[in-house]
Length: 340
Image: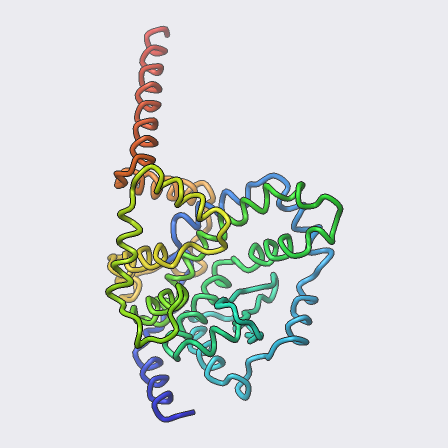
């Protein structure tokens, strides 16, 4: 390992606070929680999952990557191995997932599996990011595993890649489930971005990953302030057609757009919640039981708050409609009281 890289790795490890027994619900985005709670209630999801995993088991996916990728070990991609070790230690997590590097020009990474999930990094990610940035990606994927995202992400991947081979006309049958999985999948990235920040505890590398994801390789040609300005410009486009285009542009995407993730992560980094976690104020594993109803309510409250802040025509129309329905409901309630 070159001396400069050794020093960067040592500094990264030295400044990271260990988050003892932290529960991933401490950082999960309310939109992710709500979407996942709703997803688990989708009719037929469990039956489809059992059928798909019965046809293509977790072990077959692992064997596929053992055969076609490079498994990360102390001797193969040792810097990635060290990053995963540091991430597991930072989160005080009892399970260290296997990591594979696969040959691919696409700037992406993912998690697969159910009982023993594992991480797959595309070679382009490993080669294009420096140590601090790659550590963010490793921690991001670990966040998915800790939040229990791997099983649903695996199911979505299998449905998208194998559905036509599993059963005739499968695409029509599973289309609603795929749509629900896609919607949740995009929200899950917002939670994993927070995990990346918490494990590395350094904002700039996390923002740099999103900037490079958007299309930048040569950092000498990039400017973070300009990229933040780009995110602000996207947010400021609030005409009716702009709103419609934003929805249509997003619906087929596997991830939220980089500028959206940038805005969400920066807002959370500046929030009291992020600082409180670093100061040791967070949920501990084993002391909190998931409540789907509460998760959905928190997600609803989040969207309601976001809608209230929006001044674009779509938000204004939706807010006016909601207020009108609320007043109508109050009027009906008063009328009913007068009858009894």
